[in-house]
Amino acid sequence: MRDAEKDRLVDQVVQAQKQLQRHVASTYSNPLLQVNLTMQQLKVLLMLSMGEARSSQELTRGLGVGPATVTGLVDRLAAQGLVGRREDPQDRRVRLVEPTESGRALVAKLEAAGTNHFRGLLETLDTEDLVALNRIVGRLTEAAEAEAGSAE
Image 1 (cartoon, rainbow, N blue to C red):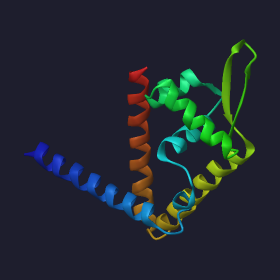
Image 2 (tube, rainbow, N blue to C red):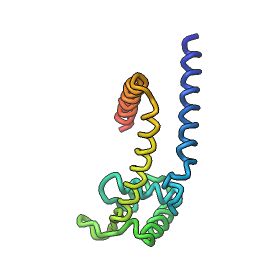
Image 3 (cartoon, rainbow, N blue to C red):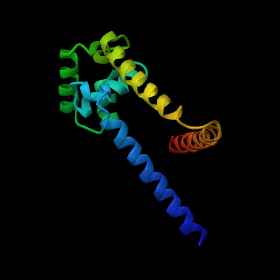
């Protein structure tokens, strides 16, 4: 019976998390709703903002799409001034793609808006709930790190 209770609770948490996501996504002040990017373009920009410049081949693998799709996505992002291309110093045949200052600023703006909104929601909780949530999020982070480590 305990497994059924745990399954029920997991389902409730998943549903609550979906409701929270829908609320956050539908907030009119969300700058994500004001960005003129497709989901795929946003994914490219986010991937590029997480580290070093990447080749088109790396973007193709990371997105799970074909080379022509990546070329089109990068072309449209470059036309908006959000990414640039440069020669790979290790292999002149390879072009690396990286976010421009405008691209980095856009990602920073989106991240800051999300953080500020989440912070506001957290501030509605009392100290006892925040302590419990902090412990739970820490355990979820550990589980995610362990899962990522076992996938490598």
